[in-house]
Image (cartoon, rainbow, N blue to C red; front, top):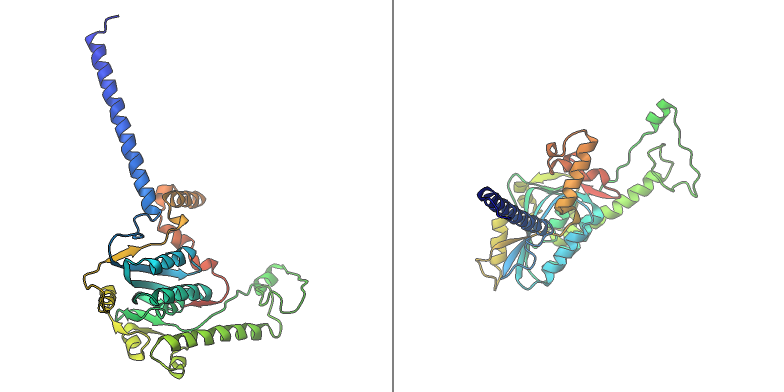
Amino acid sequence: MTETVDQIFDRRNLRRKVTFWRIAAFVALVAALVAALWAGGLFSGQGASGDHIARVSISGVIQQDRPLLEMLEKIEKDDSVKGVVLTINSPGGTTVGGEDIFNAVRKVAEKKPVAASVGTLAASAGYMIATGSDHIVARRSSIVGSIGVIFQYPQAHKLLDKIGVSLEEVKSAPLKAEPSPFHVPPPGAIAVIEELIDDSYQWFVDLVTDRRPLNRAEVLALADGRIMSGDRGVETKLIDAIGDEEAARKWITAKDGIADDLELVDWNPKRKEDSLFFRSQARAWVAQQLGLPAAALPDEALDRIIPKRLFLDGLLSLWQG
């Protein structure tokens, strides 16, 4: 059967359209793959070629953070990393989380110089982590300090009394699960918590005494929970100098044998929640619960709707401004 001219042109047009969409689909697939690898941390600085100084960001509420600890261990063993700048912007968090990261920073500092650059604030457990470095700089208006520990528990028994609800308990001993939010703590419960708080507080004071050019009496005078500016922090020796991360980098490169032209390279821990799929799914779920289209809820809004500090438990070293 002989094709007409129109049929030949139609077939060629169809072939061109099919080819175009195949190329478009391939480009989209490659873009999605690159985005997924980026979100997974492949291009986050790990395994960067050539000597460099690692920049590690510690921000937000401090918790036990296995991905961050694993990354610090990699930095410790990576010979191409000649030093580390910790950029800290944190109000603190759990005492155990701060202790974990502090210990990991000290392991790195045993092999290579570590400097901390404070942004808006490094308070409580955030300051604890900063003391793990060999040199601390901050802006004049940064907030530092808040050395101390806190234990919080809600009291809802008055509300329950008003609505006629009571909680009955059978337990092995009077101090089990105390203090409780459902009744006034029994004698001795607060004393036990105070003993726990004091033990952790004394440990925190000893840590600062060991890491800063201060004696224990001087640290105790500052360890009443107070916060202070970067300027005041230099005066009291809680930090070493006024400066930014470039000042921290220069302090590192001033060390013997370290080139002064080394660049700062970002290292970011690999987190499952950083994947594009997880973020989009979480955003879609939250938007659905609020009766909104997913596009109306940016990813950064998730942290404002469900702040991390709501899920903290145990002893806290946290400045709550």
